[in-house]
Structures are given as structure tokens and as C-alpha cells.
Image (cartoon, rainbow, N blue to C red; front, side, top):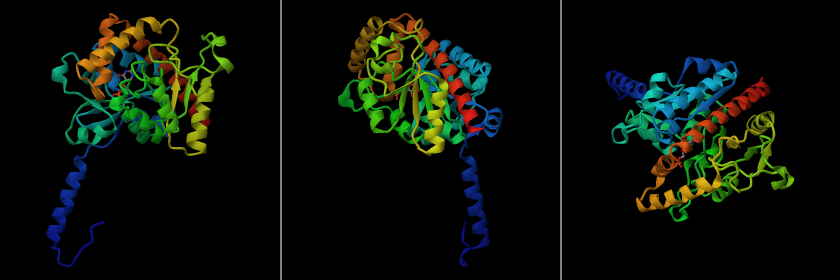
Length: 347
Ligand code: PSU
């Protein structure tokens, strides 16, 4: 509230108020589509989706087809999809077909100038009216602001393998402070999954892996699975928790977020279906070789993941992209089931 001091002239005050108003109305606000707003108000299940996977994670055509088919899958199974991104500096929850096309068209990588928007990039992107895909971290932030609990994607960021770089994805810290659940196929196998899991433990983030009934259970003492590693069903690193049905996943969110008001997020890992996952022998060799290339080219930080995924696609003749698209679709279905179960618990 502006205090009126006797030495301030009314005209000065009026001018100040007008300037403040102009300034504030120029700041783009979180824009939520009417359909999503309505669904959230009515406690209908909503599943959010990120857009870095569209702008930087997958090549053109596969990315737009994936984005549209995933939205369709969520809808056909009874929830509302909410794809999130920044369009001309505006944080949007619920992207239009045109917005998706703009983000997806990454054919000329020099010309697009599209941003990979994580937590630290948000103010810059808004100030400069930029367009960009949101990472898991940024999608969690916008989902939480909109009131969405569940978010589905492909693979989590994590601790990168060249440890000297101390390159830890902002996704991990976000999971410690934003109560949104990420349904994914585990940390990306290009990462140091052991260190990623240690980091998540320190940050108090529950990681649970879904038993889809397709594992040879005698390999897993006490029925405890390992976390999947994005392209592969088993990374070899223990999953702290295993779950057998989506109702249990929803109960975990409800107990932590609504009963206990814990502020952390949750990771629900859905192993890629058996016929979709890539054989370890094929993918591990390619990843090791590509990491060496990344070091040679000096590629680090936020550029590392897009570089790795792009090169792995080339080296597998597109097989890695097909696998990536299929498990995102599978995760979207799982996310929808969790969102429906959670909406029932909340009603
Ligand atoms: N899942 C995919 N492909 C992707 C990503 C997820 O199948 O490209 C993105 C997510 O946006 C995630 C990001 O947040 O990769 C991780 O990037 P970084 O390692 O730079 O934090």
C-alpha cells in the first residue's frame, strides 16, 4: 500500500501508480487453459507433461507425434492432459496445437534459439519473452502452481558420469522441495544411476519401481526390484521401494502430501515394456562411446543430455527414439491411472 506523505503531490502519486500498474501487467502470468482450470477445480484427474522432451529430447516429427499421441492416450483413459511450456515468455499450462508445433520444430538447430527451461532459467525466459521447453524441474514448478499432482515423462535427470564436473541435474533438487509426482522410466542410463539414487535418498525423495509382473522374480531377493535405467528395465541399482499397483502409488502421494504435508516430490519408475526395452549389451556400449565423444567435444551442463540422446539415436538408426516414445506413452498411461486413483482418494 502506498503511503501518502504530505510532501508528495497528487499528480506524482497518480503517475507512480500508473507506472507500477503498467509494470505489473507487463509481467506474463501463469496461463492455464480453461479445460485444465475447470478439471482442477472439479478435482478431475489431470496429468501434466513436459516439453523439453519435445524441444530438445526427440527429433522432429517423432516429437510432435509423441506429444499428440500421449495427450490422446491420457484423454482416452479418463484424465485431462496438461502439456507445459513457455511461449513468448508466458508460462503456459495446456499448450495449443500451434504451441506444440513451435516447440517441436527443431530441424534447424541453429535457427530455433529455443530454450531448455529449468528452474534457474524461468525469470530470464519471462523477462526476454522467450519460447522454450520445460524440463522436469520447471514442469514440476508450474504443475504445482497450477494445482496438478501427477506428471508423466520419459527419464529423470541425475548425477552425470564424469563426477569431477559435479554436474547434478536441477531435477533432483526440485524433487526435494516441490510436491509433484514424476512418473518416468528411471534416471537416464547415460547418467551415474548409483550416485543419482544416493542423492535422492539424501534429499528425502521416495523412489518406487513398478512390478509389472514381467520380471524373473528369483533374481530379486524379497521381491525388491532395481530401478529401471530409461532404455533398460534394470539398471542394476536397488530401488528403495517397489509397488505392485497404482492405487498404492496414489496412497503414497496422499499420505505424504495431503496427510503429512511433506513438501518433497515422488518418483514412480515404470520399467519400459519387455518388447520395447533395449538390450543392455547394445545400449551400454553405445552410451560409453558417446560419453567419450561428449568429453572430446567439451559438451557439458544442459547441452549434455540433448547431445547424448541425439547421438544415440544416430548410432541405433532411430531405434532408441522408438523405444523412448513407446515408454513415454506407457508412462502416460501409468500416470493417468495414478492420477485417477489419487482424485478418488481426494474426493
Ligand atoms: N525424458 C526424455 N527425454 C528428455 C527428458 C526427459 O525421455 O529429453 C528431459 C527432461 O526434461 C529432463 C531433462 O528434465 O531431460 C534432463 O536434463 P538435464 O540432464 O540437463 O538436467
